[in-house]
Amino acid sequence: MSADLRRFAQHNPLGAIGGVIMLLTLVAAVAANAVSTHDPTRTDAAHTFLPPGSSHWLGTDHLGRDIYSRIVHGARISLAVGITCSGLGGVVGGLLGLLTGYGGRRAELIMLPVLDVMQAFPLLVLALVMTAALGPSLVTVIVAISVPLIPRVARVVRAMTLSIRETSYVEAALAMGANSARIVLRHILPNTMAPLIVLATAQLGSAILVEAALSFLGLGVPEPYPSWGRMLSVSAAEFAVRAPWVVIFPGLAISLVVFASNLLGDGLRDFLDPRLRI
Amino acid sequence: MRAYLARRLGLAALTLVGMSVVVFVLLRVAPGNIVDLVFQSAGYVDLAQKQRLAHELLLDRPIAVQYLLWAGQILHGDLGPSYRYGRPAWEIVRPRIPVTIELAILALLVSLAVGLPTGIVSATRQNTGADYALRVFSLAGLSMPAFWLGMVIILVLVRVFGWIPSMLYVSAHTDLRAHLLLFLFPALAAGYRSAALISRMTRSSMLEVLREDYVRTAWAKGLHARTVVSRHALQNALLPIVTVIGTEFTFLIGGLVVTETVFNLPGVAKYLVEAILWRDYPVVQNLVMFIAIVVVVTNLAVDLLYARLDPRVRYG
Image 1 (cartoon, rainbow over the protein chains, first blue to last red):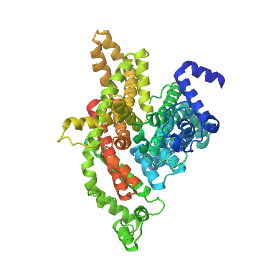
Image 2: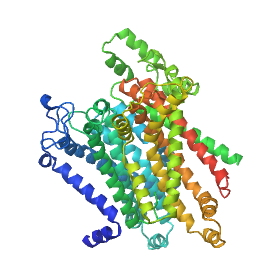
Image 3: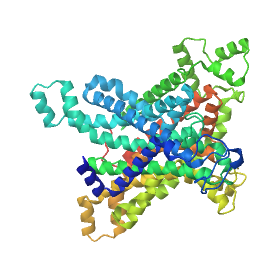
Image 4: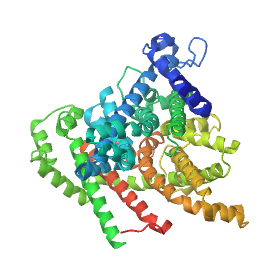
């Protein structure tokens, strides 16, 4: 394991940097209470729009809340949503892909049009409508982002399954009398893991971006818990000229984490599956 | 070709029917029905009015009948009433369509103008400093939220250049220069992400083609570098790039939702957000269907474009 990690870091220094940034963000999110300097929800009317300084590292917003502490706590929402959504999308999409790839024509006939239809919606528009229908909450946001990710994963896994089931080792397993479940679980599934991991990492960034956009539009995880997208909401834009730090730092946080996850995703792709190019 | 066209059109129609079912069902799983929600936001309830509204929205009919009547409405280009404005939604949407189309086309132009050259340079100078710089540039484009980029652009214009961009819509007829200036920055903000994707796709597609035998032959013949890259490599690398441009258009429309909101452009996407926030559900349902139609038609157009670009693609 550690040898693998070292090999990865040697061959993909950029990917390793991305991984380290992701890990640091994860630690900050888990230990948010210890890492933050202030209560992220406490307002302070006497200290609104303080510029970055020694008491408030990244300044304060229009309600006098500490921006640094809000960003640290906001990492929880972004990562929770990002990781859960790409995980859910990966597992459900992977299962559907295996099923349509190995299940033969009947499964294909039912599933393919459904996947086609789901993929035809713009990700953000489908997520928007789902949050509008279900009402804003953490669970809604997770569902609204995971569901549009499913068909994207399912397509890739299906294509992989189709090519793997034609290989000679699957034929050999069949000749030895293995049943479908054994072939799928022992022979096909392990071979789809690498692209699946790559895909899930690539979608981590999209999931975080869509969550930010939903929160920005006021349809994300509701107040008072801080989320990066909501820190940038339309009301924040009004203060941007007076207090640029209110807008700049949360946006930098989103960009940095998504950038890191993209670096990690690219690195993993080159490392695990050089054939797959996105 | 004709058989292919017929099949492809049939498939597009089927996708649209599927999408309409999804949209229809989605807005009916909402807790409480549309009438309750419309009245909730209005703040008072008059029972007779409520029943009239339910009747108007066809909610007193069986669900299958509701769906068929609604689909018929959409096919006739009827977007139903907007409860927020008390006018037919189509009247509100129609003047907004050119704004969104113009922004989408400009953003696509920006992304092509930036994405193609950077991708080509990246591929022809693989693993040089220029390649690394351009790859970081495109990865950054994939990582920045479009709405934040928009905010930062406005911020820089105001703080650094002391120029406050107009937030009021100017039509092309009254003042063309102001009109284009109004669209320039939103197009940049929305186009950067697509530019990044196109650049990455162009790079990997070009890298593959540059290693082909016929490209080596072209070099061996002593052809000019520009001829080899543009005639031999780029033309053959274009097919996957066109696919990305096609799928990217779907993303672009999603991106316009936030860009139009940040720059206060009166487009269709901004109206969708407003309708969602105002819980004007009939409008949401019909607008999403409208966007779905645009997406399906674009994908169809991209598929048909293949034939023109790659004679190897046979339709049958």
